[in-house]
Image (cartoon, rainbow, N blue to C red; front, side):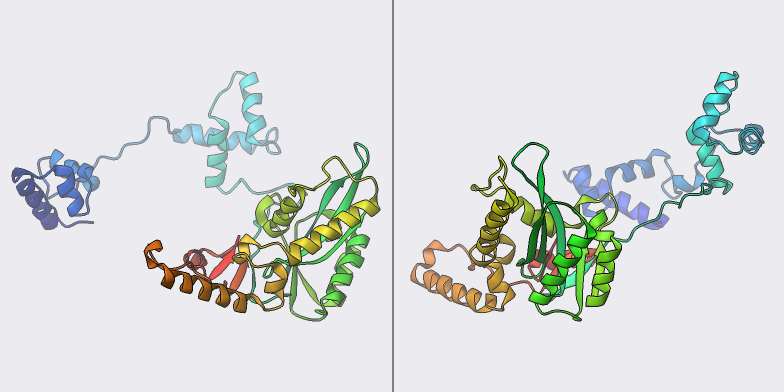
Length: 355
């Protein structure tokens, strides 16, 4: 709350500035107040009193009276309506020629009297925490998902199971099956863990909430391998962005057979060539255009150091062609799945990266 003396002083300063030729709005902005605030101070003629304190508070015209409120509570607690929500009570009352309030008002009164509790036998709605994972090195956080590949005829599909390391973006495991099942996922992930030699290590496996991801056989396998489970929030499509991104890259390749694979063997052969290209030759934009294998096996820093020296020599040779510093060649130290709010400033500086 601004003191009365400060309001008087501010008003005098603004009036002096206006008399000297300044705009009233500009003068107000210099004092960090809005012109509407100045108008409110001056409208009553007495700027020593704050109008917000002395304003007359009256009951809203559309507010229920105490008698109407009591009648509403009596109706919703009656034997006839005690098991019905307001969305059904109000129409039923209107059929009888009675109108007390709208459905939203019924709900508001019930909330105020703490009578709007969950009473069904099913589970009440639960607030899901945002899944956040951080990787500082390869094989700490993996993301996996399943996508459909078109088959030889309409309605026939093959199912690509794929795991990507979120730190290096390397595809560490993939397989194609003719169906989706927890058993297929179990054997597929076990092979990936053994091939990367991370059994028993601090590994987090993130996925969405599909039935193959939640099957008992997969959960038993992950428990035996010492892998921690992380899942997306129900109904949130962007909690598994790394897998969705690699699937988009796969399906938008110019050589992708969008008209369908003739059989599962041809699908496996094509995906095998894609994975080899993606890991070994694809200069990934999220890795400042080094390949996932270079990042995965620790060659990224030396490559970026070499690129930096090339750019520095080019700038020394033709400094007139550069308006500022050369580009930033530092790689992020951390990769996040759902960057926390306090990390957003660091993300902009390039110290962390993530969705």
